[in-house]
Image (cartoon, helix red, strand yellow):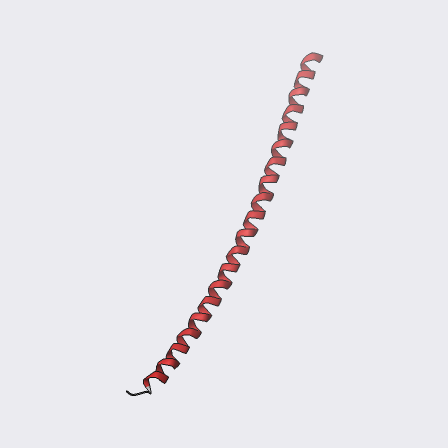
Length: 77
């Protein structure tokens, strides 16, 4: 009987160790995912900022083209 209790205790310890190891591995994966998601978010924000800057530059270029067109159209050959 004592031998069986010892075997059961060994199995319980093995399960506890495996569970602890799996938990540590899952925690590491979650932390890595968090880092990756944070980086993706940062890159996305940079992309939005770059897009806004590009839109602003295009708007200014369009306005300058309109002004240039007005100036050029005032000349007659």
